[in-house]
Length: 338
Image: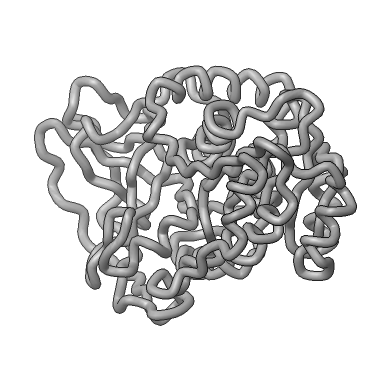
């Protein structure tokens, strides 16, 4: 059995449940000895960990996502390479993806990991453009739920984030006129100059409702929402007839899920014969293979750009979670572990 020379694992655990923003005092970085590898297990050196909005909702004690108890490792998807194996289906050096947790070395049943055949490089692509909670989610939300048609107005919130940046690009590929909502002039410039959006709205410095009326005087046909709160209300107030509102996330609400602010202008849906529909990528399992195939092709030919924001070292994991909720990242936010 090939063996690694590693002897300890560094991991990030939950110290206490945050009642507001999750900050460094809620997490603990600790070391532990690696266990002996059992038959059917593999050892993985984690290369990249995905920082997703869902992490915050896992810390509450109850909710839609799998919950994390104090003392437990923080859940996080990741990619890495096998460094030790006790399973005939995996060899040292194989690239794998799966639920790895916020740690440097994963010891797990081989059956829990997805082997990446002929993987693209860098492996970070499998958490960004090819990630289930990012690129695949964006593809499904656009293609299966929102379904923008050529010439329609497509608006996306958190447009400079991981999902929003991909969703807007897919809508653009499909012929829609794309407007992104993001925070700050640099992000708005990025949407237009790098991602090819038609227009951008700076929610930190502009009146979103007024700008939507200016940029979409005939109304919004598809609104892809990752934010919730006042941004969602502004979009609802500017819907076209038979519009589609796609609820992918609501990052503005996750720090206080006991007091979620719902849309006050939801009657616009009735007035304008429109619909609002929520989804998660795992509701569309049959769509994952075609999504992966098309996203891979776009990446290869340059039709799709996936900016990455990467923090170095497992010790930066708590900082990365805070960074995301402060709106600091452009594109996919990750931690590079090794």
